[in-house]
Amino acid sequence: MAGLQQTNSEKILLSWVRQSTRNYPQVNVTNFTTSWSDGLAFNALLHSHRPDLFDWNAVASLHSPVQRLDHAFNIARQHLGIEKLLDPEDVATACPDKKSILMYVTSLFQVLPQQVTMEAIREVEMLPRHSRTAREEHIQVHQQRFSQEVSCFSFCFWFAAQKWLFLLP
Image 1 (cartoon, rainbow, N blue to C red):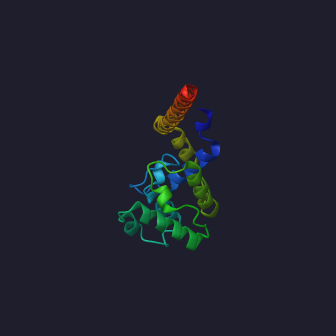
Image 2 (image 1 turned 90 degrees about the vertical axis):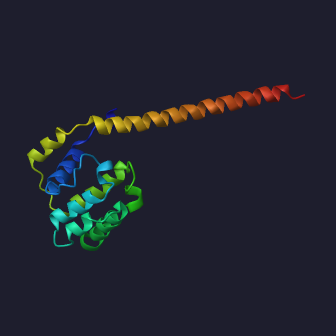
Image 3 (image 1 turned 180 degrees about the vertical axis):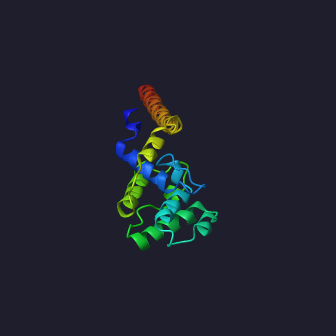
């Protein structure tokens, strides 16, 4: 359970993102997984600091999350010098990899203005944590069950093989 705790660095980064994307009603970043899969958060973060780079409404109206993600990653590469570290198809999933999202957002944090208010940090501390924690625990439980099922199957197979070998003349 300790591995699910949010670090201070994550809180500051999430506070910065929320503060930066506050004026984008379609965007509500509450974590470093599912909040990013539709591509809007990446684009809003870029647009909030560099509105001169693209038309927000044109990007927001794109129907494909992969197109929106590709747009954000290309803008970040061309104008901010951030390599395209993520593939849009890997992010446009039900639960993108948290460490990958954190790494990429940290890269944005390093090149964009970084002022974070105490109010934004307090807001992050007040976010409901049960939904993210429950989802991550749900995934872990399924992984453990699968592992147990595989172990049980392996044992049953081994046991059957031993009986079969014993019956051979």
